[in-house]
Image (cartoon, rainbow, N blue to C red):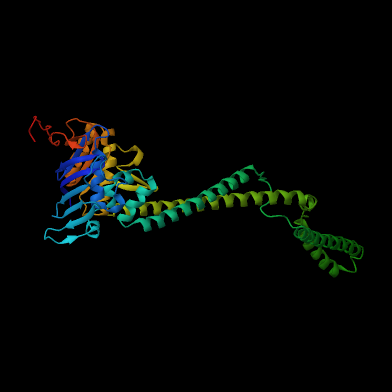
Length: 422
C-alpha cells in the first residue's frame, strides 16, 4: 500500500504565512498563484518535513515573523509528522501514539519524490542507469554493451582491412596465360635431357638400319654363298624398317623458349599468386566481418530480450544505446507529459511505498498536457503536488502573499479609543 499525504499545515516557512491543504489522494493537486507568493515554499516545506535536515532551507523562518516555523503533515498510514519550536525539531507519531524519527520516514519517503526535477534534469546516461539499477539488469546490460562495443570495434578494424585488401588485389596486374606455379630451371633441364635421350635412342636405331642396309648390300654380292644368311638378314631388315617407320623426333623448342624466358614467366606467376593471395585475404576478412556482425546482432538481441523480460515501471519504457526511451522516443523528443510520466513511474519503482511526488514550475505545460498527466496519475493511483504560475481554474488552490486565497488571516480592526476610557 503506497503512502500519500492526507493533509498538511504550514506556518511561517520562507514565504508562507499560513497554508492548509488537503491534496487529492490520486491525481494532480496544483498550487497556483503569481510569482513570489509562496508556492515553492509549500513544496520546500513538505520536503523539509519528510526528507530531513538536508532539505532544511538556509533561512526557514519567514521574514518579519517572530513566530518560528511550524509544519504539520498527516500521512495516509496514520503517521503525523511535525516540526515546531525554536529548533524545528522533528516529531513523528504513529497511529498507536508511539514516537518515531527520520529513520521511520526514510522507509517510505523516496528522496527523488521530494526533488523530481533532480531526476528530470539528470543526463540521459544517468536516467538510464537509474532505471537499469532499479530493475536489476544494469550490470548484465553493461556487460553486454561492453562486449558489443568490443566486437563492434573489432569488426570495424576487420572491415577496414578487408576493404584495403580488396582494393589492393583489384589494382594488381594478372597474367591469364602464365602457369599456376613458378617454373623450375632444373625441371626444364630434366625434361630436355629426357627428350634428348629419347632422340638419341632414335638415332641409334637409324644407325642400326644403315648398318643392316650395308650388310644387306654385302650379302647381295655374296648371295650365292650366303643364301641362308641373306634370308635371316632380310627378315631383320624388314622388321627394322617397320620399327623406324613410326618414329618421330620430339621438339625441344618450347622447353628451350621456357628456359630462355623462365624469369619473365616466373615474374608473371608470382604476380598472379600474390593477387590470388590478396583476394583470399580480402575474402577471409570479409568472412570475419560477417561472423562478427552475427555476434553483434546476437548480443543486441540479448539486450532486447533482457529489457523485454525485465520488470519495467512503465509499458513502453526501455534503454537503447545507453539512453532512456519511451514508446521509441528519447528523452529530448518526449512530450512534457511523457517526461513526467516516466520520471514519476521510475520514482515509484525506486520505492513503491512512496505514493506521492512533488513538482515545481509546471507553468511551462499547457492545459492539455496537465490534464493528460493528471488522468495518468489517477489511473496509476499516484498523488502529485505541484506548483504553477497561474490563477486559472486548473489550480486546486491559489496562494497569495503567503495565504490560500479565501482563507486569509482575518484582518483585525484597530481598537476605537475614546477620551477618558482605558
